[in-house]
Length: 503
Image (tube, rainbow, N blue to C red; front, side, top):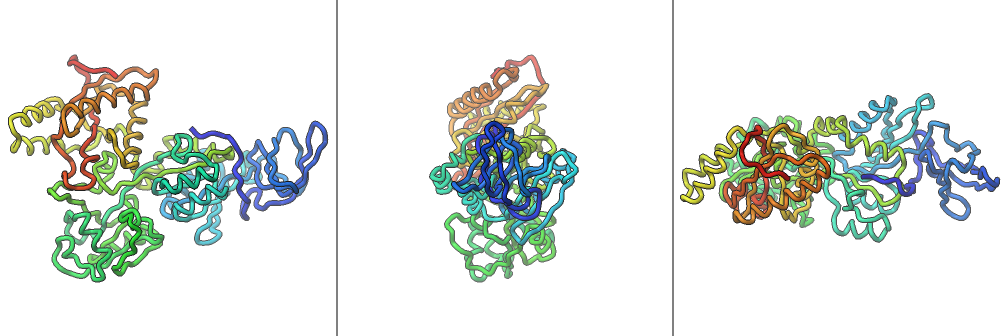
């Protein structure tokens, strides 16, 4: 999906292959014309130099290079990434280490300061030798770096905003939501976390938010016995911004921690403490479920995130400008699509929706619903119960007509997985909507989308069950209910001779 269509305008920094911008002379092999300037970038195919009349890009196979700044035969300038503090300090180094290992390249790391890290892959003796320059910053700063040419890639723990998209368009770097510029790597979620020594109890989203603006926060606000509590969050403020998009600053006293690991360790040993942090960084802390206005709960678990059943979910995404990417970056992006990279993401605590079987509470919920169902509802529930006998739920969920971009991203990821799905089983789509007719229409559109995504791959054996509004997973009065309840769950069951629909 990533294209090589222009060389990133990245100034070189100290500490790696081609460490500093030095003067070189590039001479044309055909007519001897020469140009002298400071070498800004070399990706193995193109030189980029700052000459008297501006920035020039010249093909390496058409010129010779002379001067102390000329690269060695194995040397390139690498690329620059601006990364959000959390994934940039933990996940990105792990991905670079795995990439270096896959390429059999030695990797060294140098912390320049609190927000800049240099990773050098290879050396003078290896086939490749380049530097990855990482800046840790807020996502907003990352998108700004991308717009002005100071980054080749942004690693963000939120989606790009409409204002940031407009700035990118004005800067001439394209539509950051286009397929070849935005990629969702994985998913994470915010959780309210406390010590495992405190009894677990579901809390309301409103009660939790209110604590951050109360000068004297108390456990009574969450339904616990009255007692003072201590609030904790990660520094840099991005988690709080996801929790409350109004931009309001907390009115309560908050202890800020540089990273999630430190925060989780404090919460583990402090029963009076309550924190906000990503599920991926929960560590030894206990994550509390969220309860809706009607009593339905949302579990802060990897399964809940994968199935779109937890409201505080957010994607981990990478963004690239619409210009030529350094070849080293293209190779790294290709690595991110491999099983080795997926393993790194999962080990770092991120959620990758996949076609593996997950634990399901549907059977329990069906039996509970039958006790209070009308005659018509009972018939629908009995149909579902019979259809799912012997079936297993997959860690995928489609979200028809979702307006929230995070749910759309979750659904698109599920469709991507199904496009490559090759089961020795029957796929079962269980569609939920306000009416049975709407659920049928959603399932029909999903089958069309799936057939298009699969292309020439063999059609899947498939069954469709339209459930209407039965078995909601969110309370109707909650603000996330409509999009969470309208869904298509994916199951698989052993192939039989029963009637099947093929995509």
